[in-house]
Length: 352
Ligand SMILES: *Cc1c(COP(=O)(O)O)cnc(C)c1O
Image: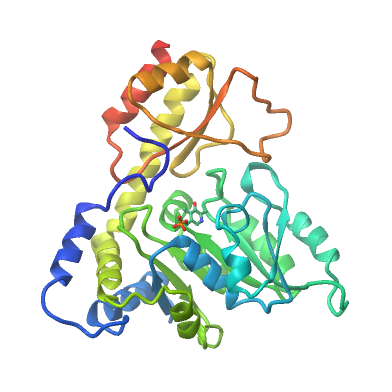
């Protein structure tokens, strides 16, 4: 079983069935079809708010395009120093914003603090022609360390961001995992806190290739259809994106999948933490487990056919060091993870 990421798997059968159903007959192209319309309605219901929705095929596309709607080319976008937008998107946010600057803020466990944001803001004074102008903040929820911002932590960050005139972007590649882990609603994790636009991930939690850029303010989305088209993210058979999102959101499928993935991660974390010589770098709050293993355990896992992703991070807890012989791996669980996969992995580590 491959635990390297939640995108090493295909789509869930339910999403595939929705695709097959939408495959029948003909529909208008470029996302003005009935399936996409239904996906938009379902997202409005899920968020309990009027929304303007743009479906795209990748999370990088969603993030980079969302940020391009929030900042001028001379703007600064504040984000965690290890965030996906800064570290893992090959400069797409910089390209689609026509050159805005991403400013990384350090912070333990993949999270930055309100104080960290305030300090970063001081370095870019408004109206000073030599400085990029503070324009947006981007928060990942789930973070790149598999941790979560509590709703109170989000409030505290936005209490610094909003008075400073920053627009707020939420990178929700694992939105559902975060939402069910916090036990809150989609609204409570977004517009009710002051989030302006969400990259609503669906691929990792069951879709084949579908993410939604969700705006709560029509004015911000005004020219977005042109941004999406010129980025190559306006899919001609757009109903196939719409159908994935409808399948994903129907009958609470997205919530069931996330709950299952989180439960599998909790079991895995518990099992690994109890194994001799194994340490967890961060608390497991959603569907990712970050474990430091002795080399024998790493070898045993490989021999048994289990895969994790070799990891490195600057946001380890203070005093947490990794020995030269130790191996730092990320394990991600998903809708497709079975309890016997988790038990097998834990057993292989324990036996070693
Ligand atoms: C996976 C992920 C994305 C989206 O990545 P793509 O590979 O472009 O789909 C965005 N943000 C975070 C935090 C992610 O983990």
